[in-house]
Each structure stands twice: as structure tokens, then as C-alpha cells.
Length: 164
Image (cartoon, rainbow, N blue to C red; front, side):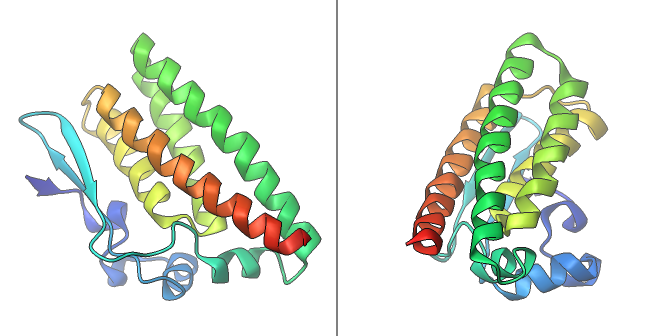
């Protein structure tokens, strides 16, 4: 079993760009994306119970404006769900390049709202299909769907707090 390169998994702080470093400073995330080339499977594990969304990053990008932050959450919920559906369809159809593009795009959106585990998973899928040429698997998509569901649940709770 091998870990993907640190710049993809966002674990080696020397490789982080300033925005990612600042974003991770608000979280105790220790999730790892693991790739097993022999079996083409992925697993992820959480070594501590951490939030799926960095509230500090979300507050930062929302510039302290609860209405604007709630709008950003709505965009992420709608756009993210659509991208996850498209990744599932592209995986089923074998459109690897499209999977990579969609995963890359979702990674950026996830980083914007501080959903680091989701961003790591997207980066792993992107690298797997576009750089390593490994076909996307249903298992990868299942992990992505579960992580997005967890992020969506947490974002919905945060939005409820903001609009209460």
C-alpha cells in the first residue's frame, strides 16, 4: 500500500500553498487517502474525529457575512451534488479524462469551504485517472459520495445556524 504524493494528499506542510496551509491550520484533519496499485482500490481512514468542514475557512471565505456564507453553502451543495453525479456517470461510462476534470473542479470547491477530506479524495481520484492512468472504480465513487454526503450534512447544519 502506498500513499499518494504529499502535494496531492495535503499532508506534508512544506508542500502546501499558503491558502491551503492557512485552511488546514483551522482543522485537526488527519485523514489519509491510500492507494493500492495491485488491487486498484482506495480506502480512507480518520485517525481522529474531526469535522468534515473547516468552520474557520468557511467563515474566512464568507468574509464574516452570514448571508453570503449561506449562499456559498447553497452553491456548494447544488454544484457539488451535480459534480458527484457526473463523476458516477463518467465512471460508469469509462470517461476517465472527464472524471479527472470533474474531480479537480470539485477539489477546488471543497477547498474553498474547508472540506479537506473531500478535497483529498478528489485529488486522489484526479491523479489516479489522469496521471497514473488507473481507471476509476465504483469503490472510489462510493467513497466520494459518502464523503460528499458527510460534507453536505455538515454544511446544511452550519447554514441552519447562520440563518437562525
